[in-house]
Each structure stands twice: as structure tokens, then as C-alpha cells.
Length: 127
Image (cartoon, rainbow, N blue to C red; front, side):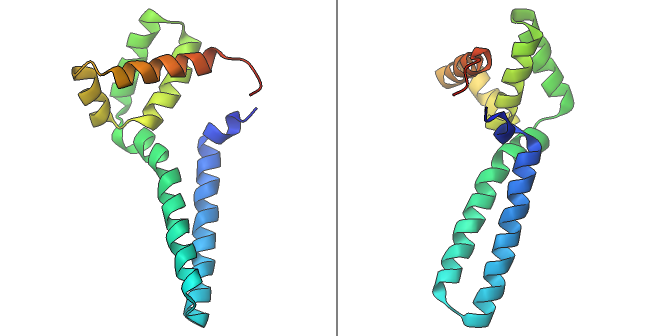
């Protein structure tokens, strides 16, 4: 039901809205010098960064060749649809260097995340 929230267009739309709100608050702060506009600017900047992290992880830190290797390895163990779903979630959650560090240490965190992602991908309920 809320699958649109994981889409890149939703994240880009949020980023644009946050930039517009920040611009509005900066303009109002320059006019009035009220401190509540500074609070709004800081909060909006925080939300801007919070929504940009998955987008950054997915498109900046991962190389396409590395993504293809991970998907090929997953496809050997699981079906292709499940791998695409896990791929989207994992590439946005972890940067490439973090993924390599977790993979080398056989971290339980990565295994638990993949297990949870599989459950979410296979779950066809509305909520």
C-alpha cells in the first residue's frame, strides 16, 4: 500500500519540498530576524539530510558492477523477484564500504537485515 514511499521519485519530491520550505524560512528569517525561523531551517535541513541518505547510498557509493555481482550471487540462492526487492532495500540501507566491512566480519546485523528484507518482500499484506 505504501510502496510509493520507497520510490526514488518520492524521495526526490521530498527533497524539493524541503528545499522550498528552507528557502521560505530563510526569506522570512531575513525579513523578521525571529529565532523560530532558525529552528525551522535547522529542522528542515535535518529532514533533508535524513531523506537524502538512502538516495546517496544507492546511487553514489555503489558501482553498477558491484551491484550486478551482488544480484548475481543472490539469484543463485533465491528467485529473481526476491533478489530485486532485497537489492533495492540493501543498496539504500548500506554504503558499499559498510557492506564490505559487514560481509568480511560475517556480521549478524547484515544477516538479520537480509532476513527482514526477505520477509518484507515476501509479505503481500496491505499493512
